[in-house]
Length: 277
Ligand SMILES: C[S@@+](CC[C@H](N)C(=O)[O-])C[C@H]1O[C@@H](n2cnc3c(N)ncnc32)[C@H](O)[C@@H]1O
Image 1 (tube, rainbow, N blue to C red):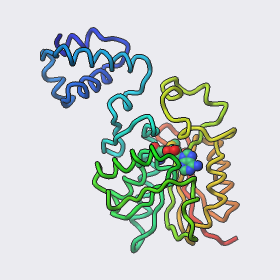
Image 2 (tube, rainbow, N blue to C red; image 1 turned 90 degrees about the horizontal axis):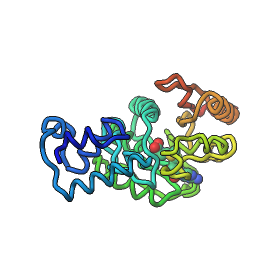
Image 3 (spheres, rainbow, N blue to C red; image 1 turned 30 degrees about the vertical axis):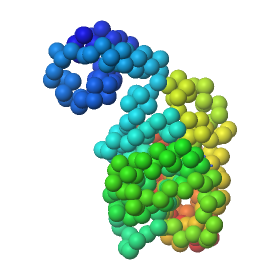
């Protein structure tokens, strides 16, 4: 069977997903798939392609099938141990990079709930500064470590298994702390897309009744590790959560601003610890 027959006959997924799956299965660039539509596919490859097409049709996310997701113009390795990187998280990364580039010397940077490592790794890559990356999931840390090697920042990123900041024993001196912790509310779970519910790790998504259990715990202990005038940046799920997290931070002596994502949803909280209370 030729590539073009495949594309026209296998239905139920988008055209761009078909091209991505073919590119993965045949180990060819997407452009090659497009410019040689009449190339024939071996029987063995044919069976493999049919299997992964079926997986996708049944809801398994494309990123997990091809073990890859683009973020900040880099290809990250992903599997079912980690959340699939979301485009809105790029805003958090950009903000953090801008803050760090304005700092003098070698600031201490921490990424809490690193998952596939996207935030910490991209900060290290674009600033040249070391980043300590924490996650409670050892499987996620294995993925993040693989990505740090892939992106070329192995010596600049350090991965530690920790329940929030528990592994940081000494009183810290961190200048920038970034976090994209789980923030889905318990009652929202049933309404998530099936692809997300059935395949992405619950540990990376669920944040308790109002979605803010993890942020509440983190903000309670932040002052132990953040230095004076240090920054805390995190991602939340909209105006309601942005308001609650901002209020928690203001109570702790932070100056807070909120940043909207590409769809106009309040998504990023950017806070500086003034500690003037
Ligand atoms: C929403 S995912 C974000 C992953 C990644 N930072 C990103 O932006 O794609 C949240 C991450 O927090 C981790 N996590 C959940 N509970 C945690 C805890 N108590 N301490 C540290 N990490 C935790 C999960 O394992 C998951 O990797």
